[in-house]
Structures are given as C-alpha cells and as structure tokens.
Image (cartoon, rainbow, N blue to C red; front, side, top):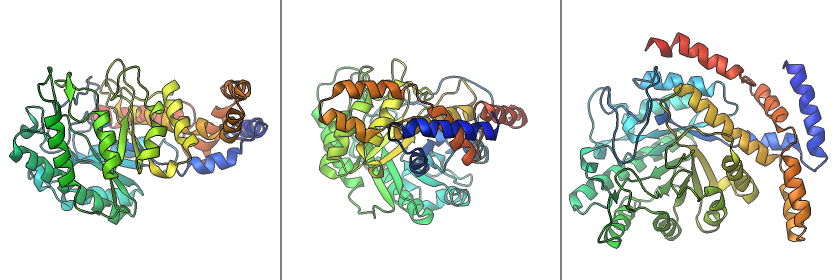
Length: 421
C-alpha cells in the first residue's frame, strides 16, 4: 500500500473506532509514550564481553541454534541493535547485562565493576536518544558454578555477589543520572536444587539477608529503581528455586521494590496477565519480561498471541502505566537475530495498540451493571475492527516500514553486514 492508501484506510478505521467511543488519535499519542526495553542478549546469544569469544553457560541461560552472523564484539552488537530500532516505531530503551561491560581489554572481576566500564555504553545511548536498564549478572561465573549465589551457604561467596549487586546499582544510578531517564535494575539469580532439598527455608533466609544488604544503600528513585525476579525452575534447579514467586512477592511488598513478572517463569498453565492487577495493588511498580515459553522457559521470540494481547490489555486497563516498565527477554539463535528483535518488539507495540483501541471505560461500565452480554458482544466485535490500518498509519508517521518491508531492510543488512562475519 502507498501512503495515500494507508491514510485512507486509517480514516476508515478512525470512523469505525469512533462508533464505539474510541479516539484513535489519542490512542496513538499514548502509544508513542510507552517505551519497550530491548534486551542486549538477543544479539549475541547471551555471550557478553568479559572475555573475547566467550559464551556464557549455566544457571538456566541457554540459547539454542547457530544461525550465522551473531555480534562478536561491542561495535557489532550496537550496530545490530540500531538496525533493529530503525524499523521499529517509537523511542525505546536498551536493557544491558553487567557482563556486557566495556573493559578495554582488561578483565575486571564482577565485584569490581564501576561506572567507567559502562561509560561508552552511556555515551552511545545518549547519542542515540536511548534510555537504559540494567541487570547484575548473577550467573555463569566460577562463584556460581555450584548453582548458588546470593543464597549460597558460604558467606564469602554470598558477599562476593552482594558486592556485585552493590556495584551494579551504582552503575545503574549513573546511567540514570547521565541519560536523564530512570534506570530499572533487575535482580535475578539462578539459585536452586536439582533434587528435593532437606532445607527449603534456610536458603531463603540467606537470600533475604543478602538482598537487604545490597539494597540498603539509598538511591534516588529518579535515577534507579530495583526489581526482583522470580522463577519456577531452571536447568539444574528443577526441584527447588530459592527465589520463587511467593518469596519475591513477599519481598517486593515488604521492601517496596518493583516485582518482575517474566512470562516464561511460571507453570505452563499460569499466565502473567492474570497476575498483573494483583501485583499493582501491593507493589510500588511492576517490571515485565515479555517472553514466550514453549513447554518450559524456552524464551522464544514474542508473537502476537492471545497471552501477549491479554498482557497488554491488563496494562492499559489498569490505568497504572506510569508504574509499569516493559522489557523483552528472549534469545533465539536459530533465526536472524536482528529480525528476532524486530518481530518481538513490533508485536509488543501492536499488542499495546490493540489494547489502547479498546473502549475500556464502556466495558467496565457494562460489567458494573452486570451486563455481561454487552461486555462479551463488544469484546468479540473488537476482534474484527481494523487495528492493522491504524498500525500501518503509526509506522508511516514514525518513518518506519509497513508490512513486510522491514524484513527486506533486515535481509539487505544480513547480505551486506551479517553474512561477512
């Protein structure tokens, strides 16, 4: 479709949505204020830059596939990231792990990292008008080899990881200060037992103590917010995970941190869309790691499925978008990595658009009147309204390709850049 056809289709869509009380222009204005935090680790299969050619392993972190062209260094990762963003509408963020530091060729131990090791990332983000989020790397390290970090029975190892967490919070605060945009620092650990433990409470008591110590130093919430992330199980931790959902829900509520909900970190019959409203009532904020589990926490590329749309609708219906931070978390090495970023991010934005085009107030009013017939009828009618015409218009307005044209851009990049690596 050419631009005139897209504009005409948009006008038709506007009329269709206006008939049910939806202001499409207002929805698009709201959409452009919602950033998505794209995860750096999709670009190099969770490799990081602690040492050349390294591939992080262990702690349940596992990327499968060997598609050619992955980023091998900081410069390539940044170029790939910007290529992905060039075909995604809106302004977004980069989510960086501590193991992606720029140490100038000199290995730095994780409890000794400083803001200077991420200054080039901050400068790059500022030059490209990106916000940044951050993650301590509590895995793939000799002091995590036995599957425990912040809940380790050895106080020396616990202290090492506490020091790492403290260092990361300082780095995140500096990111927030220099970029003028609050950094969200997410704390996830792989700690757990492969088989049935004799002591379930001990590791959790140690984890509370460790988290309390590393979060004790006050940081201006305008610079950094801390989130804690739960998980059901991991590779090598199939029977017990120290940081379960119940543990972190209690911790976040009692310590007033953000809680992270990862779409792949629950039982296959559990959906995080059903948890969002409860978390928002008790926690000061919510961080999402939007992923797609296939039978387990397999971190497949996000698609526009029912659960993604349900997540987006819960976010919008809550009226608390100012307390919600949306990040992606998947790593598929079986397909073009840049395309994986683009597919997942565009789908997340599409889901938010669909949610913003819903007459939420009318639906809630029908529900309060117990008019469930009207509620169901409207919800079903929405499924056939022309949201895709609004999406195409939004892409044009933001100067990015519509339809499969973005894929042609990525294919050219693969032929000209990725294939030569």
